[in-house]
Each structure stands twice: as C-alpha cells, then as structure tokens.
Length: 485
Ligand code: 5AD
Figure 1 (cartoon, protein in one colour):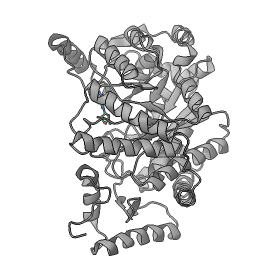
Figure 2: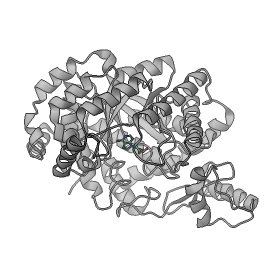
Figure 3: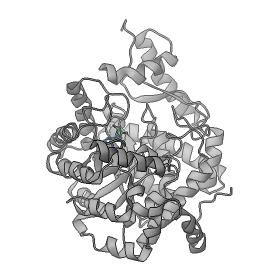
Figure 4: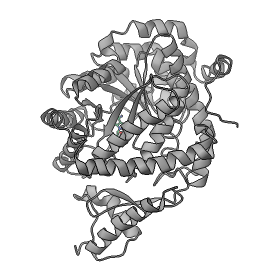
C-alpha cells in the first residue's frame, strides 16, 4: 500500500464508495445529494459546530455524556432523559462493539435478542444495522446536536450512514481509532480508511454542509503524556484538513495535575492552529475537548463524584470548549440513565461555578505549556522529516521508529517502549523515553522530575512507580506512593 497525505480524487473516492456501500444492506439506501438536502434541513441550533462556536463566543464549556443502547426507541428515550434531566448541552450516540468491528451479523442478533428481552444486549447503538431512516428518527427526536462516538478502525460505511442519518459531528481518526483499540489493523489501511471518512465530510463541506470532526484525544487513557496525544491530534487534524474537513475539535484526556491539564489544552490549541496555518488551512475552525479521567475509577459512587468534579474543574479552568463526562458507574460498566445524568449535573454545577475563572495565563501554566509545546515540536518535526514533508508517510515511519509511541497500546505496530510515570506533584512525566526524539534538555527535565519523586519516596525510579500510578486514582490517590511514605 502506498499511503500519501493527498486529497482523494473524485474518481478514487467514488470507486471506493461503490464497495463501501455494499458492505451491508443499509448502504444501498444512500444517496449523497438527498443526504445533503436532509442535512441542510436541520435547524442551526441543532448543528454541532454552531453550538461549539457559540460556546467559544461565550467563553463557556459545554457538557456531553456518552450513551448508547441497542433498541432505537430506548436510545431516543435515553438521550431525551440526558438532555432533560442531565442538562446535557451536546448529545452522543455511542456505537456498540460489534459495529466497531464491522460484525453486522452479530449486531443484528444483538438487536433481535434485545427486542425479545426488552433490555440492551449491545453496549451501544448499532447505527449501520439500523440505517439512514432510523438514524434520522433518532437525531430529529432531540433538541440538541448529536455526535457519533465509537472506536472503529474501518468506519467508512458507518460514516456514510451517520452523516446521511442527520448526525452533525463525528469522532475518530486513522491513528487514534487504531493504535489504542486494535492489535492487528495496519496503520496504512486505517489512515486510508479515515482519509475516506474525512473526504466524505469534505464533500459535504463543499456542498455547503459543515460537519464537526473530532480526533479521539485520550488514546489508551492511561498515563498518556500530553505531548504524545497532542502530537497525534495535530497529525490527525492535518490529515483531515487535507481531505477538506473545516471544523475540528481536538481532544485531551485529564491527567489529574491541574497545571499540566490546563497547559495541555493550551498547547493543543496553539499548536493545532500553528500547524494547520503552516499548511494553508487557515479557514479550518478549531475547538477543544477535555475528557474527564479516562483511567481506572473508584468503585464507590461518592468517590467517583470527586474524580468527576475535579475533571469538570480542570476543563472549566482550561477553557476547553466542551467536556466529556464520566458517571459514578464507571468502575461497573455501562451506566444507568440516572447515573449518567448525575455525572452530568455534578459537572454542570462545577462548570457554571468556575465559568469566570481562567487559569491559562498563570505563570506555572505558561511554563508547562512551553514545555509541552517544545516536546510536541520535537515529535512533529521529526514526523515531518521522516515523511519528507508528508504527514501520512511520516506517521507510518514514526510508529515504526518509535518516534510516535503510545503507552499501553495493544497494536503490534506500536513500539511500546515509552513508559510514563507521575512526578512528585502528580504531573505525567516520562520514565523511559524510548525513541522519542527529544532534545537533551527535555530528556534531563524528565529525569530530574522523576528523581525528585524517587528521593521523596526513598525508592529508586522504577517500573513499580508506573504500576502504582496506574492503580492510584481507583484507590483514592493521584500519585501511587509506597505505603511507607
Ligand atoms: N453508554 C455509556 N457509556 C459508555 N461507554 C462506552 N459505551 C457506553 C455506553 N453504551 C463509556 C465507558 C467509558 C468510556 C470510554 O465510554 O463507560 O467511560
């Protein structure tokens, strides 16, 4: 395969489209012109990008849950409940795992079994099996804009049906929906599949319909250094913009140290803009999403509210455009609608209390922002160099070389050499740099930060710190200290 960061021609796109629409029976109902007309009939206040732009103007942070069940009437009720009782500003449709793996026959069985038992036998909403018309019933039954959230390496048919079905925002990317989710999917292929998805959205843009796109920020959600997830977000933004995407929301998963969290959103915002502008994409709009803690949660519901509220505070103080909200059932599995709404209301309370405070310019945050940006530049400039200016080619080479390396990812195409750990104040630093192309000054900075923690804990810097940190929040701490400290 010969991947290049080049806009797909109409000939390439439509030849591929014929095959894509044959992947499942509901693909045959698709008609691009009719879908454009349907999208144009959606009122402005129900368009995702419009609501995000409003939040930027008002300097507020919008709240969005995750949610999806197998039966469409139940799914509508769930989303209506989350907008009414949960005060959600933006709505999701979380797609089930079979659909994410293109296993539509099993999704069909899941729908049938759910009908028999009247409870959801799928862990999300099977968009492809339902097809365009049922998706339109869902999206038109709600007051708020709705986004598709998933984790699908080959999401081409899902994208077609989703956008024709009236969703106005779409999550994912060729790196972020492969490396953290899959063991065997080749990166060349998933980048190509997501070029297709982005080109489709580019075609809608060219027809006058703007669809918001969100690369998945948190990656594995486990102690991810901001420079790594932010670099992936910048690359996926460049790849998407190349295909004609005009509205991007870049994301980051909470680490837990407030200064670092605010700085990470800052750095993400500044460098996504800078790199898009550098390649001439000055007209692409950028907003940000902050994900409440994506790692292990406490079992106890009240303790979970503590974690949720701290994430809400960080999102507000970082001035993120939206925050993805967790629930007090996170440690148990798919939440009830009541638990989901209670996570939202806790978040809403904190967000509106902190609306008028902004931590982005305090000196410690500025210093951390500069550090993250310096690290990102080392990574991004090396990717560009490896690809001789082509970020798709560079990304493949960078994963092979470990220049891009996602901690705890299952993919066999990921080097897995980089090992993160928290420093003495809970910021995520890098214990094993692996092959990250950092300058000597940056390497020393990380060493020194971990040495400070080791001295405080009276133990050597070691892999044990990493293990302790992975489990710490579930046990009620941020930094995983030995019992003797
Ligand atoms: N409904 C609600 N939350 C879901 N998640 C996954 N599927 C669903 C669903 N159908 C959440 C998980 C985790 C995150 C990655 O997505 O609980 O918080």
